[in-house]
Image (cartoon, rainbow, N blue to C red; front, top):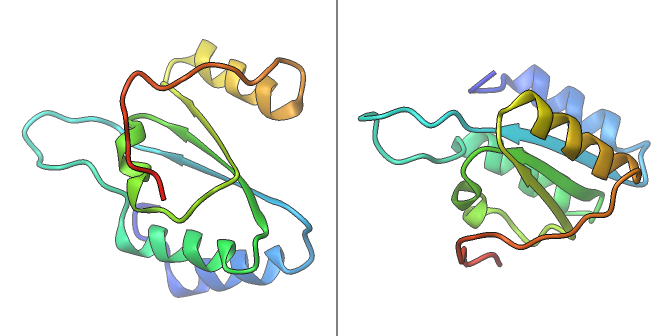
Length: 111
């Protein structure tokens, strides 16, 4: 959901308490003439809450990496595009079957 509900956020936060590490998946779909691309405020707040106790180990994001600038420091970012092959490759990196390497072709100001 673009705007997660209170119940969905509560369920995610409650279930994260039993985890040592948590992986969060996000995506943005770039569309022309709709304004600036950003993660919703609710989603950023949810990620901040997960990171508050350092349980969020990884964010896997498909789409424009610049939308991640407003997030707190995340130990590991895996960034890809929305193609099927790229999604599969990102999941292989996450599973440890492929080395995580590469650099962004932009310079976001991550915190």
